[in-house]
Image (cartoon, rainbow, N blue to C red; front, side):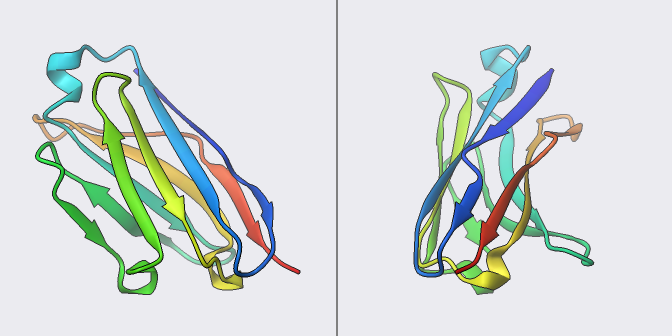
Length: 118
């Protein structure tokens, strides 16, 4: 099983980015019930939850991104997205995709760098 993130880059404050994570090597019957999440590891800080989305498309967000970020998933494509709007310099860091399957097994992607700077 592999998780591969994409969509990171350099953006000015106030700008937007859309991150994508594709899961390969996982059958649909395992992917669909799993929870997908995005984490941020800012420079010098621990990895923290940004948002997650359950099998039933119930979403949860960190307070710092509520109203600015939207997480969504496409089960047919085994993808999860993170639409990031009104970006701030504090949003800078490496964004990691995480999959937690119905058995509690956790898998991570390698991350994609997001830099918010003028």
